[in-house]
Image 1: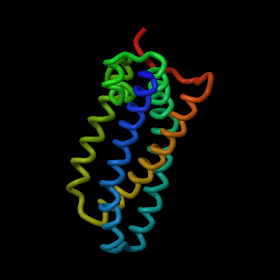
Image 2 (image 1 turned 120 degrees about the vertical axis):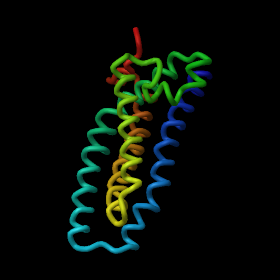
Image 3 (image 1 turned 60 degrees about the vertical axis):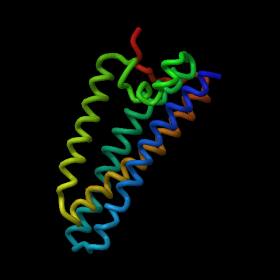
Image 4 (image 1 turned 135 degrees about the vertical axis):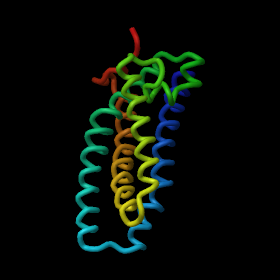
Length: 167
């Protein structure tokens, strides 16, 4: 039972974080449309959205973050302890109980995201909305990919990705 709780809490915690970010960014992204876009800004919006879909959504989330995170959620299900259950979301993301490389990657990516959020906050509309729209697409793709990978990891007999936990 504790394994099911740990994996569910890990998935809901991480998924909730992504959904919360999408929820906060959508109004800012939509502001760009209310301000109005010139034809070059529309072109940039389309290109940026495609770039973020491919780089953030597909390559960042679907190919890297989601498979590893789903493997870690499976690991939580199969190796539950009280502490792992309590800290399931941060374990799932690779901040703790992970190989050193995984921890460094998780922390580095998080710090990079925080820096970008601070910088983008100072960008005027419609440019900020264009940036945020692409980010919403990437995060949305990633959120869907996370739930699909988690379903596969938790229902398949074998899941071909490593949770990258210490030996």
